[in-house]
Length: 253
Image (cartoon, rainbow, N blue to C red; front, side):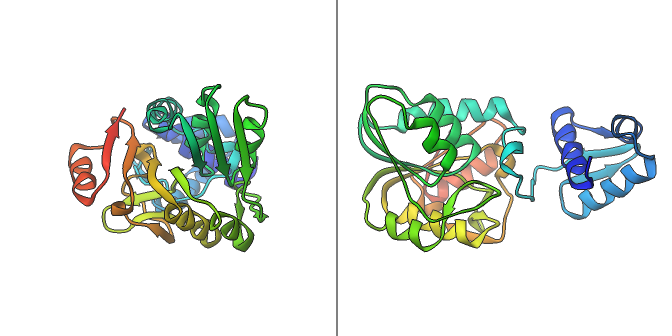
């Protein structure tokens, strides 16, 4: 197992169980305890874990951008509930946009058949999932495909978006906070997400609570640009009140 992969597994275990024990991690990965302590020191510097006696505990901030296969590993049940609740925001007909992301992918899986919907997406996995769905017209944006997220980005994607008027955009984010709005690590994805917001009549953010308070490199929208934020019940009352005061309706499910 490569070092980066092992470190991701450590973060996942810490978030799943609430604590990562050095002795157990050393046995699990068949490496010396000193190696695990080095991993924990690096993860602490990255703001992902905090070292404590015997191991480490998770922090709310997940500041790295996981590869596509690992995106669904965190807070799986919460993501499913968020997607289920977001169905109420899907119109009976018209054009919707599904941003590339793990929670928006779950919404795609739940879209009911029989609706005369046009679904626009920059996500190749979402497009493939929905292409055979009866009643749906699926449009992809085109453009360069990012290997890490399988999202279409850059000028072709933005030009395609600028020719549409979308009823509801369902957005994903790597971080969202009152001070810095919606953020993502990659500049090209940020530009596409910004256009997704601008071309929609209504904007719905789907985000699990691990993203709340987390800030990434590139801002693409402010909270006041959103109509609805759908998240899980782990979002704290104070944060929910601050989000609501900034503009959007907050749904905790």
